Length: 298
Image (cartoon, rainbow, N blue to C red; front, side, top):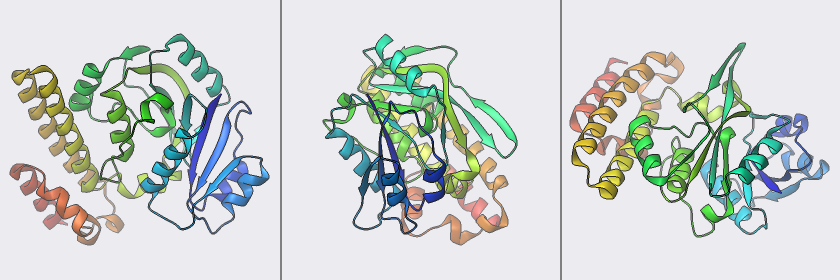
């Protein structure tokens, strides 16, 4: 059986309307909600882990993984509030896992819903096993080729000895997948199992156009490039990767600056205390200058 893990915080309306395949063993990890989320989950017969006090969202994810580790389920499927899991997702995932037993992480495709507009997220041309060396290279070359957590399903063996969401809030799910992928085979599954509803995801809506997002992605891609160098000792490819990462980060900074609304465009939003300053201190001077210039322009 596949565990379906739903981290929540004040997600009563989402849980009330949520319908899932009965084959999933559902656990709601509630971050001490005040809107009755835990009670709704219990009424539906789902397992509920209610935190004694509210923590940040990534800490709640960590608690969810720790809970999964102590179960007997081989696989855990994420479902975040606002996302949609298709009715045939369980069948697709279990068949894929049986066909590719070496995989410890499944990355499936999904729809992206932005109001009335629907697109399809796809990163690779066909279903395939990605070995750690290729996964490291892809992370450096393309960034978040793992996509949104609606497409992620991870194996007990991949997390039982430890896991890592990293120090950042935006790139936490990318870091989690990367840490698995650089040590275990990944199955890229060219089948759609759900939908990512942009406007229902509060953190995504808040941070998507932020400079913080660009810089966190830059740092993780740079880490992957260094991991690739350590593994292969291929200095020419390493240098090419660094050039690609820096160029694309510059483009992302400009794109995100252009996409910010006045509400989210001010200095206070961008320089959100010490965490952002720490991020800014970690990037090359040329990117730092561009970032500060964009902030000043606002």
